[in-house]
Length: 109
Length: 117
Image (cartoon, rainbow over all chains, first blue to last red; front, top):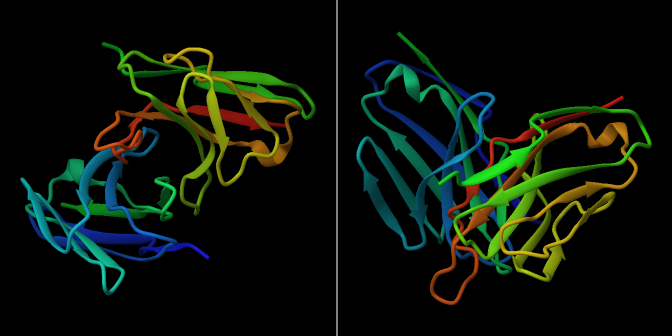
């Protein structure tokens, strides 16, 4: 079966760094995606990895290891507005996204 | 440029009633999809479309119908609502690239919160 695993909830301090992990087992792989979803709102696209390595975009970076079925999202210089759920998704062999349940990130002052 | 527009934002139904969730996008995206989001679960794909006149089933299609008569519109019909269909529904679209109709970078509507009593 297809499975995406990520922690349910994480807590971090404003100004700090947090790493949100995602492991996956899917039928085929055509890229890994991270989305941000604030409470009561729609998901918004953050990042895309299809090759191994680190992709950096401002305060956010995403890493992929295809051989390990593993990715992480790294958030630096945390701000209160980063309090949200972070969704990991993998595009399978049918070019559809398989989604994890999301990691709720709580930022404390 | 409105992006993806969903209506209604909130709806309460009684078991057995039918209704249609509307979705429209003004970005000329070929790919459109419907997801449901339930607590503790990932987004689950209900139906999707890769262009006008073409639809296909996703992971959880039972109890739902779709049609795609135009590029802009992709309505989702609940045929006979059940309490198990209480959920938040999202419509999402994507632009094509490199021979794919779905890049994976989805543009979501604001969501429709449906309660079935």
